[in-house]
Length: 205
Image (cartoon, rainbow, N blue to C red; front, side):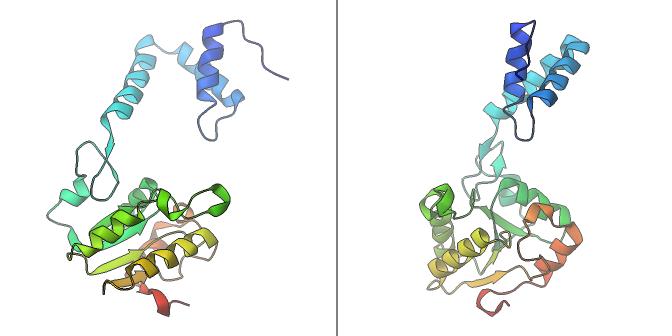
């Protein structure tokens, strides 16, 4: 049964909260009522933070990670190895790999994986820009660090074929990451070991 609201403004807030992933209308109502009980400055601070985030964050022109500048802090750092590029599905994966403390190269965020059933083909991902980046002549190794799912493996193979004639070494995470697992649900120790023990793509079991 649809919840009835005594306030149009409350209903509007609940509707917007419920559009967030994993937030149903009951949770959205709790969030809205919680904010109503707080000082007005709390709601203002939350609203301003969201507006500033949305207007101030852009995507790095090199790796497509989020950034407040044209080039993200990772790509701009002189401490990173620009000869190694780790290919990941999303911005969240960059954060997860950084938390392992095991990797000092650069990243390339695809923005998803190939999934015909969802209407996502190679042309909708940042694969062409990866190939251009490799052909620039700086990159020695590309690490395919996508989730061990059918879509992830399909994308890995497609990228491998696109890079086959470049001469760059293409590796992938060792299968310490179980088949069927997504990167975000893999613990940091296993992920770090999978990075360190990565294998050549075509030699992987």
